[in-house]
Image 1 (cartoon, rainbow, N blue to C red):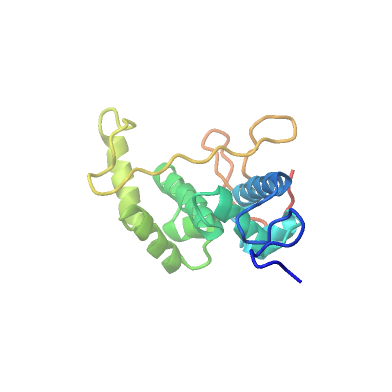
Image 2 (image 1 turned 90 degrees about the horizontal axis):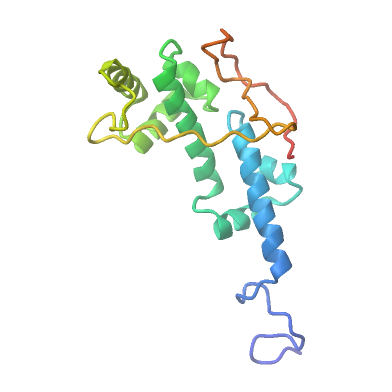
Length: 196
């Protein structure tokens, strides 16, 4: 029989009672960081919480807990933020790529859903964002630190890419390179998600 104070007779607190073991905190923080790496490497694919949890050998609920405890954003907000930041960068730097293709490249299967999410985040439609970025670049000193408009924030800086096995920055296979002349290709389908 359990004592009235809500604690068992041992020294371990009940789940949810506020006390969490140090090794549990460390494991959850590691889970959070690994999940962020999986999202950063695979945001261009169709990605679900269950897939990320499987990639880090955990359950979806544990990944949610890790995001809630250590992150400022939820899993879905993190995924959406990475996708939209990459889209803003592509729209600003690659004017030849159609908006619908940009949507597909960053993981949206429906251009209308992409446009709505982009508008909520930046306050501008993707095509208008691109036009303002182009006009901003055309001004003398076009890469200045001033915002594209007074009402819309500038495109967020891209998150640093994970490191390759040799320690050099890993390159995304879907990002076009202006210097090498590579073409932009769609993300690979049905590939296995792995962690470092």
